[in-house]
Image (cartoon, rainbow, N blue to C red; front, top):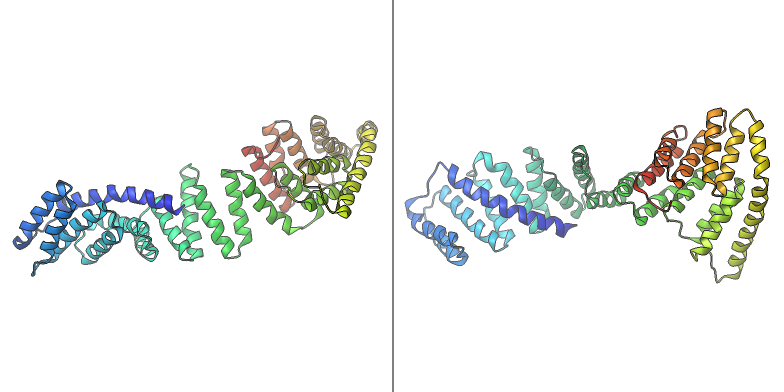
Length: 414
């Protein structure tokens, strides 16, 4: 992340400093004194031929002349800095430019640009306190270049100024989003790291949400869902979090597979419990060398298979019962059962019917399950509509928002 930023900074410096050197000569109202004119002219001629050592020797000669004016010193420093820049001697360039800025001889219309260049130079030189010093001055002067703000934010982070780093980097992210562009993934990683260092787990989780939108890779989803799973607010929320984890491929431990299956059995969804346990075995997660644990996993799988067979055989009667009930709860139960067995087309029909009839116990749960069914069917628009209708329970709203990200990014298996 830092190497990439430094490379961009160096490239920008080469352009910016060259333009400043030319501009400085054209707008200067003063002239160099006669006593330094000869070595300065020789230095300029050597510089134009890219004879850096000869030019530097003549500038050193001019620098040694007594009685120089402040403007003489300014011009000597400018030419020396240009040579050092070609030689990649960034600390020397920064030192000379800082001296010139302090001299008051820098044209007023170039001060902001010079502050920007000093920020870039000190980034290349890894002088982070100076990056912060000149970067902050540049921002106060009205600087708006997002890449320069990022350099300042990174410098604060390296100096362990986490609050300042977060503030600056979040503004860089926000301004990029306002421009209709996608913020750099590295920026969000830095923000998240700084938030974690400060112990702000909620803020870090929010940043992870942004990361999964940009790059829905399993590592980000895993870290995000670990935070959700650790909250353990209710079995209902926990089960739905596990469903999301399974979708994005972040169920990783035997305990997670087993707990999800047990929650499903308690919820009366043995078909889904069976599928979860079978997936755990397929992933080799439930293959245990410990006989006691192995027996426990196998018993749960057998329990789930027996209960699933019973429920599957009862589905025709469940469908008849749902048709007789005036409220939507029977249809919701039927839809959940169909979903449990992977019959998503029938599940979506039943869940929609339940929502239309109304008077159901858990509208949020119903809409999430409807969204999942539509997602499995490849009906993205219908899935997004269902997830967008979750409005009552804040934690279920959070989960629906994450499912929305899944639908939009295509994270996990369909």
